[in-house]
Length: 261
Image 1 (cartoon, rainbow, N blue to C red):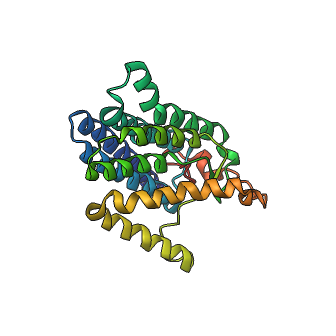
Image 2: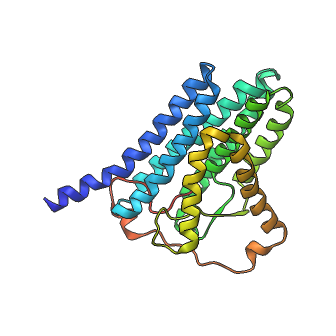
């Protein structure tokens, strides 16, 4: 009976991963049908479930190689393909079809490279930082630009959004270190608790302020990693590498114990 209960628990993180993928697919459908803002919010919602599935896997001891691969597929849909479709529909359709597809599809192409790189090297990933811009942050930054320019009226927005989207895509496959997200618990120190409270406050304020609050935060996150790389302050100490937990190789279901993005 205990074994059956434990196996059932292992399904829960994978369920959250599938919800992430489902929301990403709904976002794509909404964007294609012309409901761009709804699609953008669905990408944000997918990001919430992307964070939760990893936290649940860690709490329920449900990490596995299967979960890691499933998580990558969900991320490819929600944070690579959906933002690419959003960029195409809003900003790249007036370009030459091939050029537009190359630029708008950059989050998909480079996101796929990032996820593949993680999957073949996950045994040496650090628990202290992400190497390269996470696909989730890339997607949220694109969404933040959409919120901002849609609120302002997006005349001429393509001249700003398209170059930034290309630059963000390159950052995903870079070796620049970005800080990892806080643990969603109030038992990991005062600083972590403050970060969790800030994340909840941001989600609550998003429907009211949109890109006016989300865009500055994502830009600061991106620039912080760049500045640390330019000043070499991210390489001052060689951080220990993580060995993949034994449970994550023996389990059958559930995302990996550490999130790639």
